Length: 456
Ligand code: MLT
Ligand code: ZN
Image (cartoon, rainbow, N blue to C red):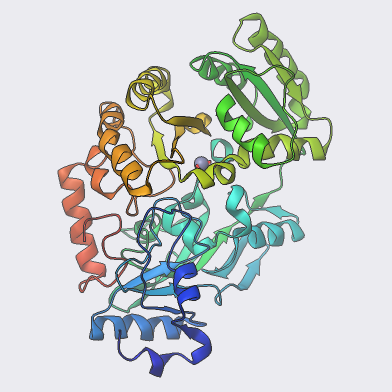
């Protein structure tokens, strides 16, 4: 049991009861042991600094915890660590209209930042199904992507400044909201995607942008998987897409069983593409749609006729993750450059058919970003650990297809515990040695989320 916590935190901000430990000690993954020793709820940067210093002196480990919507076990505390929740550091501290910048605490919920931007007539474009509970600090620590990356990029692109408490308890301010700053290493970018292994992000300056035109949503039926890319290229040649997503018929079936939604098209089709674009581009979109039908890539399509219908079409895609959660899915989150995507899709498709003949497989993802989500569903009669081990054992075959194209074994979900042992498929020996050396610089006593991302 770590010493000194009771002196730092009041009973309200320090919890050790089994329910709190179970709830705050894990993320959306369900395959890992959850066993933290305590959960703390700091309310200020000073409290975070005192906590990190105590962890260094008393040799206990810290696991940062945001909205706990992660899918790779990055926020799982399985070894008596102290969980650091940012739930009580969730305020907007400052807004500058001229700079289009919001300064906020790490625990601000993504949806609250989006709503604040809207109130100011602006837009925060990073968006995903978990926006209602994920937190900005967690988004930064995983460089979260989501459904609008094709147009607006990843969380990294919206971080203008960061305040971080490093693993040794120093407070550093990185970049401070500047657009231009040619003064050497940009430390801000080291903390984006670091999964809390170098320090704790406590504050951020996030950029906002102009709100887009009203959006239109289209769902198209695509019988052959590789044709999805031809459809993408045809639309991109003519208009700016805000999203280009895909899902399989099996993924759709799971959502329809889980939620009260309509099938998008009268006939079922093996795959569906979901597109979003600016309403003023509608005529051009319709003529591209007609061409994709003439080419035989698309069988049918539906265009949203109201905001409600647009939201329902999006729910078919965004609801997949939640609808398959009861099947304890083994998640793959792969990416390669778009130019290699065609051959990659064919190879992975063949590997999946050969590797998982007796498991149900759900495909979906952000194909416009070169990002495939491949979820293997656990059969009800197979024990969780045995299922995890079987999937884990097959993963190298799929990761080899990724490696041979210099792709990534984790496009947007992070490495955490789930992908840690496979990091070498995407990062070189030199990369890994440099990452371990950087960890020693920022976190010499290895108190920050040990065992995640890099082997402990
Ligand atoms: C998604 O694209 O739906 C999210 O990354 C979540 C998931 O893959 O399950
Ligand atoms: Zn995703």
